[in-house]
Length: 589
Image (tube, rainbow, N blue to C red; front, top):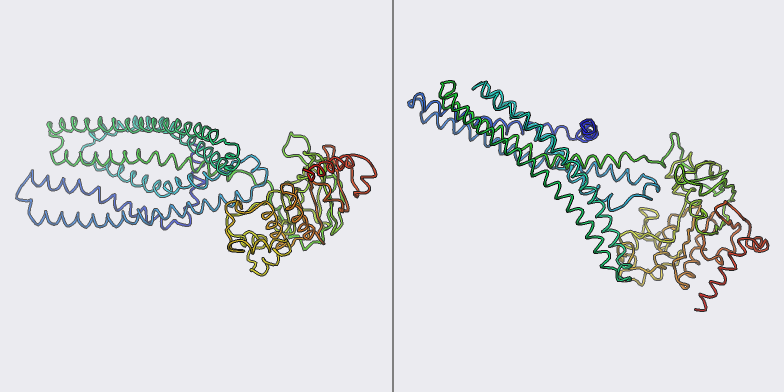
């Protein structure tokens, strides 16, 4: 555990590098405030000693000088405290900002395989709650430990100068205090991590329920979601209750040690004073320094919860950063030049993870620039997977894919994906305006370019009829738009991108007949002159494709034009016949 904690701190310390001068000043002011606090018992001792030994030596001038000196110290203390509370906290916030940037950048670069298993709500918890705890940790951790070190060291030295034996009696209690603290600290940290994990689970559950609220209400399942939330919420309460129990034990044990140490000072100090080993002024100063010592220990105790939360946050931060980026530019990768669209699949096989069966096995395929390729077959045959290998959303397990003779693994991801446009079944609408969502295809494009893309996609007419036209807010995930409208905006986005290679992944499968006709017309316009892969649920829409591939678990079982495959009377023939009968039945209904 100690080694693990040290490793986490070593991962965290570099974030201070940019702000080292702020940190040094923070610690400098911390030392000044500490000095101000340590001087008071000495001043009290001075005045008390003067009053005890010779009342005539306690002059007005001495009292005013001591008072003025201490007033100056308090002004310095106030300035130092202001710096620590203001600039020190901002330093923590800046470190949080840097860590959030690094975390989001890493998350953005992780491959699809990571998100296949990740919960977005849990990741949101790491980006917000965990990093907020780290902000407080970043500011207070060096400050609190530095101040406590100064106070304990100075108090020990001063107390030894007053009475060595009494000091050893007091400090003999500290090992026992630290042992109890260590044992309870481990339990606290464990429960804090469990608490953070459960917060992430709770966030994921809330996100799932609220994003699916229309489905929830359509099935009248509000009570089901409330019950699910209740269980997660009560589990969180159970973990929090346990963490507070350990924290209460921790605090009560330290307060008990406080009491024991005060009693030891009072009894032992009184006995030493009776025997003439210390004066009354020394005992008063001693009690004040013991109070300073115990206050320092108490501050460490109070900071322990924050420290454990911060360490838990750093641990969870590092867990994500340690996730390997599986799809990345290889060393020496070159930008892919403007392509014509000649694509080959050379003995390509793929499986999602080691030990699983292949989704695709020994796929060989050559596609000329501008050709239209349709992929059909039963669900699970690997149609979407095959298309996902082209822009390297996943990497091939065996074989290679080339575009214009360039292996896709030898070129930069950005240059590769810039030249491939994807229109999916579920078009994602970002929270913003219609303009924002189309402009996403080419960030920085002006209104004229966006309007032209919308016209090509057949979307301009309905957009102009919206309340604020292109500046209409679409709602979260485009809830204010119909399926057909979202689909045409998605097509406009790809028109604006203007890629030479196009992937249409069941782009019309979720639409009604009228919307499908409009969108299909837009897609045909988009596909002109581009090398196009089409995954279709309605086989009647792909009759004009130059190559139709019938993919099954065995691989490419059939390929050819529509006429050739129908004449062969094989799997495609039967799929087409069944699809036609279903479409006819739908039309009649």
